[in-house]
Image 1: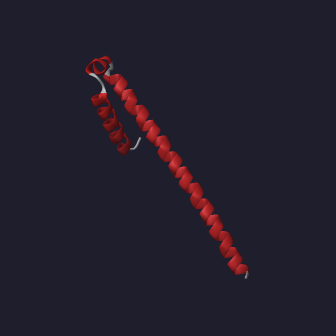
Image 2: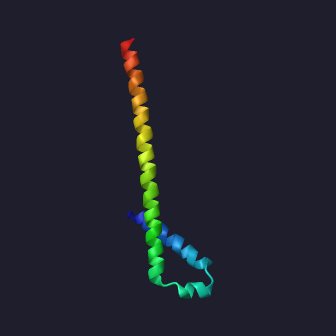
Length: 76
C-alpha cells in the first residue's frame, strides 16, 4: 500500500479510538485495530484504482472523440 494510505488509515483508527468508551477500548486488542487499519488501507486502494480506471476510460473516450473530429476535418 502507498505510505500515504497507511498514514491516513492510522489517523482514522486513532480518531475511532478516541470515540470509543473506555470499556470498549480495553476490550479491543491492538491486533484488531491493526486489522482495521489494513481494511481501511484496502478500501482506499480500491477507491483509488476505481478512480484511476474511470479517468482512463474518460480520457480514452475523449481521445476517440477528438480523433474522429480530426478525421472529419482532414476529409473536408
